[in-house]
Amino acid sequence: MSTANVNRVVDPATQTVLPEKVYPGVDDGHHAPPALPKGFEAQADELITHYPVSKRSASMPLLHLWQETFGYISPAGIDWIAAKLGLQPINILELVTFYPMFRQHPAGKIQIKVCRTLSCALGGGYALCDYFREKCKTGEPDAHGLALSPDGKYSVEFVECLAACGTAPVIMINDDFYENVTKSRADELLLKYT
Ligand code: FES
Image (cartoon, rainbow, N blue to C red; front, side, top):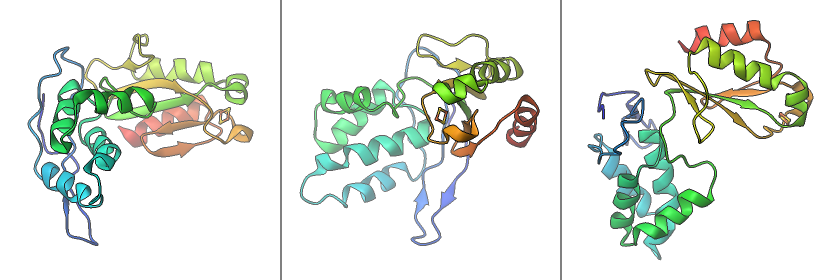
């Protein structure tokens, strides 16, 4: 797993050094324990201080921190968080499997999510998703519905309603939201995120 420095961030309000983001690219199939990037454990410890009554309440913030940093929640991540909070791994795994926003497998650095619910399906969401897969050379989706490019740069997947049904088709690229996306607009967006 690469530990290259990516997007190191200093919070201007607190001067806290937030963890460097470390994305694994394509899955090596082994989910090896990652080297924690600089700032990660300090940030985890800081989050835990927000829950003085019960460290267990820090489970969700730590899961978000792990996924923000590594791109998905690996078995090693589950073990690490459980140990950090004095819990059993099953206590963390049940959260990961319950909440759909948590990933158990790698996604791309550039994550393209295409809405497939009714308005977007009728508005061309399926054809648009096919177009992104073709342009990003991802091939077909895996068993988790995620199509990942061979270099791990792009992932393309369907999501359910993004609550902008009147402006279908709607997509997200990483945390950014786009409406009325045509193929030509898709081309522009891919250039922006290249
Ligand atoms: S159906 Fe796509 S945003 Fe609601």
